[in-house]
Length: 448
Image 1: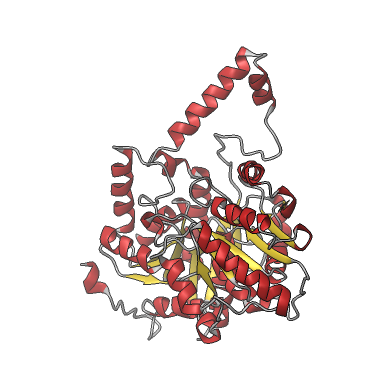
Image 2: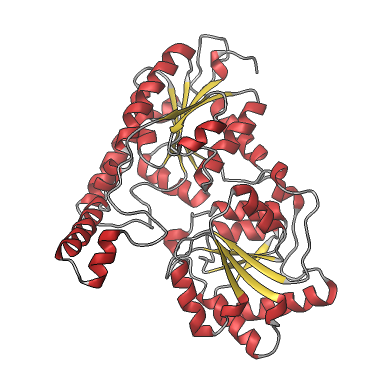
């Protein structure tokens, strides 16, 4: 590709590096490899942390804005108001707590939740986007949900005659993880349809999600999964004499739930197949760990489980690579069939067997593990017990796990960020000028 305005993409994403979130990693990696394919991504994102400005890269515009916070997000303990309320010493403290809970409940309602998601960032992002559109002559806008503000900005840019590709990392009104309440759910769905009706193309991260979006919006939907970056992984991976199971991410009771794993480990320990000095389960990430710690007491395996605070992306990759087995948790429910945890792709890159628990067995994760040969789903205690028993014997006898693990490198490579960026590039090419001033919209008839 030549460096012309035809190659410029205005990328609107609230999340971007150096943030450590999965969403930020996805957009950053796609832009990295799109650039290598000749595209020129110009990113509009959020300025959430002044310290991140030190690492600002060219063509990335961080928008400063007032962050709306209706709930306390501190992780290191209760606020003063909460402490007073909990001790019962202050009526005011109790009233403040009740008020916060009420506001949080209202804000979590469908539609209201969407409006409340970073509304002030929207205005700054829109102003910057309009200016860039005028100054660069860009013809393609790529927005990534969520929050919804990214799509809202892109919908305004669409009126300027650009082509708009709308990405969904998660479902919007159809999201199974968020609260449902009528008539708000219905109104949110209608609002989503009104916003998205003007886009030219939708991108989803999985086939089931693509089908849901196609039914809702009657649009062309392409699939661009998340991926892994081989350049991020150490060439020489440290080996440990300890059997280490590592989980990176959040835990939710009843959804991303390790209960069955703990029961299986407890049984293995009782039967003498596990030596606490040479076996460890590591939870990396600081969300919902109190729930996990309470579970451990029930199964008397506290001394075999360790907890680590949130770490950087690079440290997470290193921890995965030095593990024996990587634990994946999701939600064993048909509503979760199209959900991919971004971590599963990092796990592919780490080259370690994946034990997937609490997973819907006919969903995207099952297909991924079968196609790549990188792991196995086990939801029942007896299944997990059997698999771990085999792996423990193989590890301590030969130092290598062979059972339930047969990685297919060619298929694994298709999930690299380079491969997924190429898939996205093919989508973007449909809306690229081929003569310098004429844009061929191959799918125009589908939108009429």
